[in-house]
Image (cartoon, rainbow, N blue to C red; front, top):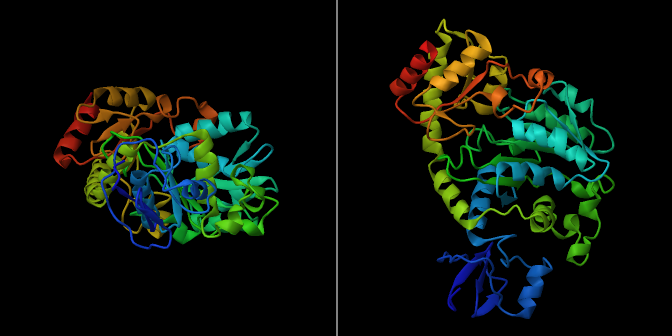
Length: 429
């Protein structure tokens, strides 16, 4: 960095070679150079940053000014208190859970999950001594029945991918809180523009920023956001990591020393620092570009998705259609409660003819891209049973509500006539 460069450290300003002003509340925007580390004012300043006595940037594996801007904006959109951006959505899932769990503990989750999340919970966590308990369904009653003294979190997707179920966040949060357990909500499909889980009782929110926020299928990223509401200090036995001194940082006690955001601070200083799932600053910049157009893209995508769903529902070549905007969808009332009239641009359907017909449709599209991403500006198609959820057996697929013939459409920004034309020619094929 140059001798005159200023960098913003939350609400404090550091002149790299011109003095440290810890009481400053003025933030100065400046050019940010490509670097892996950030220099200090002096030894006292370096020690204060490393001991968590004062906020500051020191090494990009832990924090970075560009990434910090992304974290701030997502925190503001979700109405949280702090966030940690990471390298992918999968990294966000892992960090959110591992920040709470340890050997012999468990989490409780809904069965309707994205395929990689399901596999991580079902196969990887148990190898680390953490049990993932899959509820019979996504109701608060089914989830609460599995909570015990070793449960560290309840996890759900606000809108399941690709099942399209809507979780009653308020009811599930109440059930979790009755047992002194936080609720983690993956809000990727809904986005913070359509649903804010913290308002409804969630404690931690995560996103795969790769999807709707990035919006162009170019950049991986994830984020974990702290709602700042869960009383960690009131549950010292269940969550000792927040109430006991942290030896890696000279005895800091997160719930005592960071009472407004202990979860986020520990996620950064223990999880991100030691496991290294760092979001590159350039990726943060690209995701910020996507975030700036999110509201405009969502309007067009949601408009197109309704027209696609209505067209599919009128086809004799289609056996069933799932779209949250339809009155007969079993989750429509919950969708209304949490989303108003803004339904996601994800449409799933089963072509007449079952699995073979689904494969033929998938192979025959021309405009739609055969990608396992979603939320892209482009229209995308996936066949979950043979791609994202390929590792699930028939019983697990049924429990996750993924029929073998399910086609998932992520409807993009193209002209609706072109989108429907491509659907029709693929159905004809």
